[in-house]
Image 1 (cartoon, helix red, strand yellow):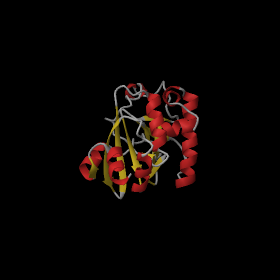
Image 2: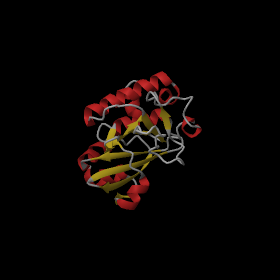
Image 3: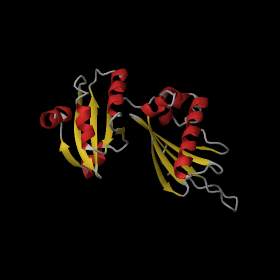
Image 4: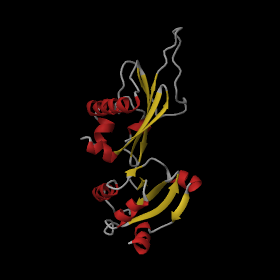
Length: 217
């Protein structure tokens, strides 16, 4: 899980579906089982409190964004106006991915999520992985010769980002196995390919594993 403290009242965290499964939940439970999703939410908030001292005080605004390999959640403590006026939302009114519970934080409550969020998560077609050491990429490439994926490698903010696109005939079980190998050396990232194309440096445009094996194997 990646945690980012935005300001005094707002924290953002990114949770991959592999992270969710390692905690004993499924992606279906996150979106459609109120009790399970609420349980996961409070586990995450306890962990966030331990790491960032972000304490739950009063009502919360919760913004949930579905991604192809996980979920991004922004949590903001609502500021209670002293004069009794309505509270101002921290997210724009034109954003359909927002939810507010006046007396509790409920994450993934199916009967209150907007339609856009309440749909199935988007098709799993790609992943982004981040590595702090190029040596991890060398070690990893030796273990992935049996997987057919399309890859490109970028450098951004002193880290290495591997973008992976899966073949159309790859099933979720195969993708999960691939991700398990990858996350033994690196981590899933919510940095988008568009951001890397604009701000990052291309190291290898394609065939990353074969190229690494050719020059470093």
